[in-house]
Each structure stands twice: as C-alpha cells, then as structure tokens.
Image (cartoon, rainbow, N blue to C red; front, side):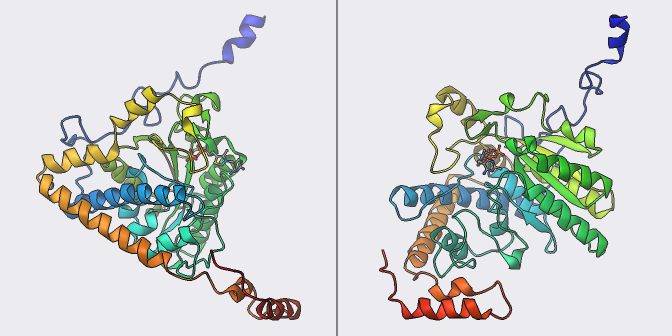
Length: 381
Ligand SMILES: Cc1ncc(C[n+]2csc(CCOP(=O)(O)OP(=O)(O)O)c2C)c(N)n1
C-alpha cells in the first residue's frame, strides 16, 4: 500500500538529538559582557587584548580601503565588516606550520600571523610593494611566509584545496592543519561535496569553516538550501560539525581551537558554521539596498562582534574609554602611514610579468620580454 511504502520516509533533522551541535549555537559572550563559564575557552588576557586590537584595526582598515576605492585610488575591495571575529580568532589559534585557504572575507588571518600591513595594503594597490607583483585582483592577498594561499575568485575551490593540502600534511606526517574557508553560498557548490567526502574518507587534518553571513550577494541563505542549518550538512559526510556564534570571538576561538586539536590528534576534519552577518556591501561593486532591508541590517548591527568584545573587555577590566581612544588613534595613524607609504610606490617592473613561471625563460618569452622592454613605458596615472 502506498501508505506503508512511505513509512520509511522521515525527517532526518527532526530525529537529531536535542542539543545536537549542528542545530544549536555555541556562544560564550553574554548580553552583560560576561563569559558563560560552561563554554568559556579561557583565552589568556594577552590574546583577548590582541583579538580586540586586530578586530579594531580590521574595521578601520575596511573603512579606509572602501574610501580609497570610492576616490578611484584602488579598483576594488571586499570588506569583512561585521565578520571580523572569525578570521581574527582563527589567526590567533593557528600555529606556524598551519595553512590557510581564505575566501573573500578572511584575508586578515595573515595579518594576525605577522604579515606586514604595508604589504597587505600594497596588494590592494597592486604596485611594487605587493609580493604578488600586482598580478591578482585586490583583496586576494597571499603570503608564503605565513602559509596563506591567494583566494580563488571562483566560489568554493578553497575548500578542496585546503583538504588536499591537509591530505599532503597527513602523508608527510606534519603536525599541522589546513583551514579552508567558504561562504554559505559556497556550500551549494559541487566543490563542497567533493571536499567533505574526501576529508572524511581520508580523515585529513582540515578545518572547513563556513561563514554563514546570510547572503550570497543578493541570494539569501534561505533561498539556496533547504537544510535547516549549514552545519547539519556535515552529518551526511561523516564530518563532525558545530554551529557557532560567529559574532562572538570567544566562541570562535574555542571552536577553531578544538577543531585544530582534533585534527592534530589524528581525529580528522571538523566543519564549523560561523553564524554571522555581512554588514556592508558584498564588495565595492555591489549595492545591498536593492535586495535587503535596513531593518535587517540594523538588527544585526546590535550584535556587532566588536561591540560585544569591547563590552567583555570592559567587564574584565581590559578596556576603558581612554585606552579605547588611544588605540583608535594609534591604529588610524598606522593605517594612514601604510597607505601614504604604499601609494607612493611605483608600479611593478613591467619585465616582472615574465618572472616566476619558468626556472629558465623559454626563447619565445625571452624574445617577447626584449620587445616589451624596447617599447616606450606606459604613462603612469
Ligand atoms: C563559481 C562561481 N560562481 C559565481 C561567482 C560570482 N560570485 C562571486 S561571490 C558570490 C557569492 C558568494 O557567496 P558566499 O559563498 O555566501 O560568500 P560571501 O560572499 O557571502 O562571503 C558569487 C555568486 C563566482 N565568483 N564563482
């Protein structure tokens, strides 16, 4: 009978145990600024101060870079305003040998791991101060010294790339992890499926970290997946997953720290859904007022990750008005000095477009290089 035939059909999510980490929301910071002792990762006080400094700097940097783009001084910028807790917590947790494969909003992990601000800004200008010699779009920073790979502008490939790197680490018996970032939209891409399948099957030391900022440009998460959460997708692949308050830097610190410990202990990959919100535009090429309401943005501004950390810092006696003002002045000056210095740098040497691919330049490229160098230089703007 048709009725009997249907009895095997069920709602798999409804059968998950109450309190499943994929359906809940790991949170540490409480409304009064205190930390929930049952989830508190007990970050050292220096790490808390560092997190605040880095998040504050990143917020100010985003504002400055968007301004430069509006003035026509740089071509493009992808801000992570409202999502700072995720990259900064990750950068604080990672060890020197770990590798990072960012999507659009996690470039700042490398700043936390010691990459110079000037070189970071020079990448946005694409001039001779840029370690990539101006060959990538702005906001696609990378740094060999800090094991960070440039973002693939396609949506999704950074996840299989990270899983592949993690597999290599496992084969080489390195005590390190690879972190692959994605947005919520990227979890609807085939690359997510390939990466999760492979990561679980080979138990690779990877952290797959999805920033669910609720929008993929103009498509809301609710219109691109029927799954009740992003984290729950991990269950089908056999990847332990946790849904975390992505605007709570302490919760993110805990989730990434625990995932890294699992990976280093040989327990395989972890999938983290960081629940957050993109406060600004998708990029400087986007106008979000065309697809979302001011009320929605305002509601999320009240959960601002920087404000929440500031409240906690005040609660534990690490911040007051005077300290905050001094920090803002110091960071504003640091960014202004970096922009001033970097903007004055010349374009990359034009002959450099022939570098870095071949150990020895083939004859036909050598001929092209000679021809280029005989031509008059392009006028500078
Ligand atoms: C394969 C592919 N399809 C489409 C695009 C155009 N595109 C750029 S960003 C983006 C949305 C990404 O959304 P999400 O993964 O949620 O990350 P977010 O930008 O919100 O951080 C799209 C569709 C692309 N870059 N690559």
